[in-house]
Length: 166
Image 1 (cartoon, rainbow, N blue to C red):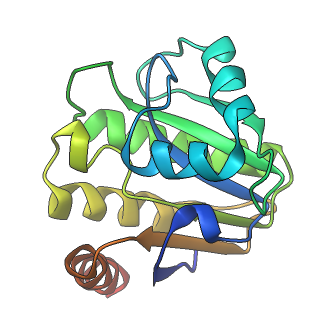
Image 2: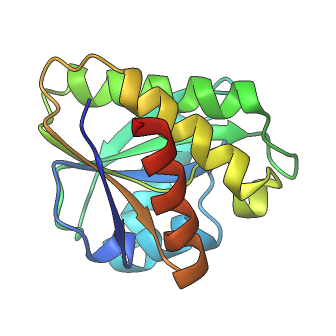
């Protein structure tokens, strides 16, 4: 599946679904979750927590509240206070794409789930995510954007995406 790499604040994106890099409790803390929570309003965290916990690699969907999206898909690539693994990142990414298709979404914005605070190597994690997205056969998805906030992460994400596409 075709996808693009963009840079910016995930909470400022417009799409059918935005993805939260979650832990299995679905309690929204800092990073991507914090940005989404601040922009969406307190209802987002309350609804997410009410739907948790989920299995490692699992997803839960909530309303997007004040975000410019219909849904937030919470992808749990790590346990609370723990670390993600290659398998949890792979599974959470696959489940996120399948959930977006089940919701009939055409557009999806996906951060580097399982990387950063989750402790998994960014380069290795983003390669896993890019590979899963590239191999996915969508039903409704036509616009998938991988998003990075920092300049260094954006450049790394672009390199990984280029390598996977070759």
